Length: 588
Image 1 (cartoon, rainbow, N blue to C red):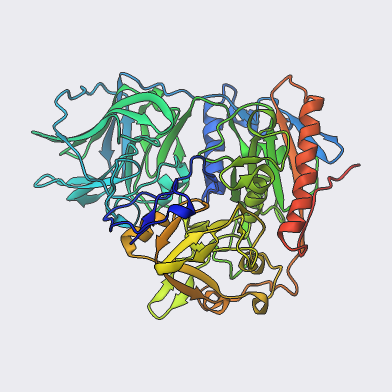
Image 2 (cartoon, rainbow, N blue to C red):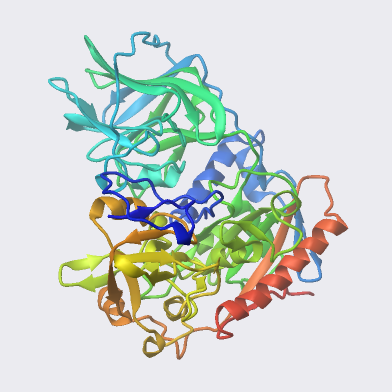
């Protein structure tokens, strides 16, 4: 495989030697989207935690009179009354420990004193990442470790080996690389013990250790920094031979994190806990407490307040604030509340009722702080190949995109999919113009064939929705979609490259392959409703949340109005004028 580093210009391309491992391509500033496939369940778990931590009775949040919705033109403004904005929940278990004791088919948890083991034992090296490929760092990886003659029993199952994650947890049956803190993934994913699930990176600083003592296994994360956050955390997981286990904390300084346990593959939502007050609490399945140094938004409370004043007639709600809050790992965050469309690679599901929308709401986008996080000009570049309005439109695209696989002679293939399996692969040609000067808003690249079997990305911007995008959105028939190309590289290279964000002037040697929409339909089924009957106009609402006692300023409202109008105009262009957004609110 030949690779030209991203900082080289197209005129200085030269063949490079073979690489055994390779990091994903990185631009100086690249776009990260916070789309969360489990977001509807995740935000419900946060809502339940908010009820648990409320200083008032939980029923006060559920049943109190909802804050009013004020309309300023076609902007909705909600001033928080204590039910929508969750205060920071700082980590409060430093210099303490949690002991979990098996009882029946669950555990009793208490804040019992367990000594911190000072002899850390063996430092761990050579971690594995996505698709079980070896990493050249210690970020978002795991290490498989045999427990030898002392297996550990967790929720009634005996395990002879564990998978130690760099992100502050161990899993059973397989490794996990996720740095996204998620109560929903805790429940639905692998069996897991998470003393401190956070986006930790011990590549340049900190280490992870394993020690076997007479009656226990001890895993230590020592001085582990959180990615893009300087403070360090030191903590241990102790697995006793009698089936007990303990989380032991020396000092934790994570910006956001989750503590919890799960038997894995559970359809039961994670149980919210207040571990600092744990006294013989019973845990029968997945349980968690999440921590954040920033304010958070109780989204079910937010949407219920909105729908108390507006009809259930909106496809997407956009939440903006005039203050900083924890909006996850991306520039913006979105998730789908329901899906009633077949053939787009998403399962049919419906969480609308718990968000106050029994029939209509499809997605929610948390865009962020209007003044603090976004440029005055919606068309100004923000990061990588994306302007501000393109990022907002990208989140709208996640209502339908991108989740599809295609059928091959060997079975289903996800080679078109990249980051989180919800964006186009870095290796896919997602061009939206025949010249290749633009690639899809949903990522991918525009690849140009060069001499010597090389391919180079040639787009100057991520712009518009491609033909395939528009088919999946219900705006174009299958007959109107040309074949899609992607680059075929060795599996170890693909595992790293496919998850990158769009980038100009990136060059590599590869073979080109073709996928037709018929192959996608063969795998996912025909789109229902088809383009002939699918909606072409989608109703959205821009909603601003302000803190208690704070009124929205004229500057904030004026800027938000510019973004609203820009998104409506841009979405029309991005869909080749086949689709439209209606952002009008209902006035009495």
